Structure formats: structure tokens, C-alpha cells
Image (cartoon, rainbow, N blue to C red):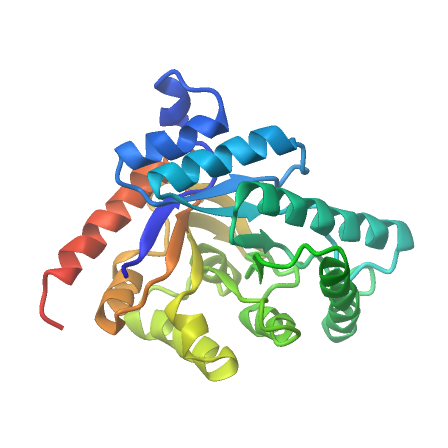
Length: 287
């Protein structure tokens, strides 16, 4: 087993090559020797069953592992009953699409802390509503995919590593999605050294077990940030952080097998290839 690399969504080069449909992505990615693809439902779950099943069929044929990014509209800490109901529906629809598609993982954002801004109270509300999400999934027979709360990059969002791990303790099929670009932005420029990257894996292993660290779902991109945190995603050609080399060094040295999804702005497939080639080069060394 090795780390798997791929893009979030469809990169510019896919469309420039004349493709339009996401069902063509698995074959296109296989031609680039990429083995992962994160299907985007971030603006809402609009894909029908036939299309989802076709994407899944193509992914299985070409050996591409699928994940889904659930809608940005999810807000687990909300105090608004209507938004809470919508959040439950967003999860249900995402789980349905994952089942049709054969996607093993669903990435989601926890949401903001609300008007009061008290993060402790907000996390308690988030855990309460998320418990309803888990119960609903079991009741409707939609369990199977892992649910992955993502670490976030803005100060006004829930999603620090500690907050994500707190949510992961609610069920054994909840695992973290660690966005190292977001962590870099949230901390004002940290996560540039091997020690900082290693500490994340160590904390996950300590909290959830070694398997969770071994098979971590990772988002990676260069991110510009301000005092408020994340401002904008860029590409590997742009002068922002974090660097991918020390992260991949830890992964190769420890023999970890994560899925690494690149979220570069438009060049996510090419930058995924850059990471994959660097990783392959590391494996030739004797650790």
C-alpha cells in the first residue's frame, strides 16, 4: 500500500483537453497515474443517481478512489431550527450520493460558532446535532462511508485540530480530514517543518489510534492568509506555504498510506502529480 494522490474537483486542464463531464474524470486521472478524486458537492448536492453511479462505475474500472465534499451550507452549531433541518438533509443527500457512487469518504465543514461566538458552547451544539446525523444515517441504512470533519483555516470557523478530533470521538466511522494549508493559515504560518507535520499525526494516533493516523485523509494546497486566517488558495507556482516536502518526508519515513487531495486553484491535478513524484522519489531512499 502506498499514499494515493488526486485533485479536488475538475482542474482547468481537464476542460482544456475537451472534457466536460465528471464521469470522464476517472479515465483522465488514470492517464496521469493519479488514484484519487474528490467529487465536489460543496455548492449543494445536485448530482442525480444515474450520473453518480456512472462516476462510480468509471472510478472502479480505472482504480480511482472516491471521496465527496459535502455542501458548505452545513452548520452543525446553529441555533436555528430551519438551518439545523437543512444540515440534516445535506448530510442525508451526501450519504445517498456516496452510496450511489461508491465513495468511501465524505468531507464536511463543522460550521461557525454562531452570533455569540462562544466556541465551547458551539462545539456542544455541534456534537448534539452531529449525533442526530449519525442516528439518521443508521436509521436510513446509509452507513458505510466515513464522515470526515475538516480542519479549517479561518479564525471565525469551528475546525481546529482539537475540535475536529472531539467530533471524531462520537463514532468509530468518523475520522479527521486534515487540511494542512488551512492549519498553516489558521496559525499564521506554522506547519512548515517536519516536526510540526509529525506532531499532527502523533496527536491523531494518540486520540483515535494508529490506524487513523496511518490512513489519514489530507487536503493540501498553498494558501495566502491574513490575521483572520485563510484568504485564498493558490498554486504550487505561487510564493505561498506550506511546503509539501517535509509532510511527504514524514509520510514516506513512517510508511503511512494517506489519501492526499490537492486543492490548488485550477492546477490541482498537476500539483498532485508534483507531490506524487516527490513521494515516489523518497521511497527509493533507505529510511
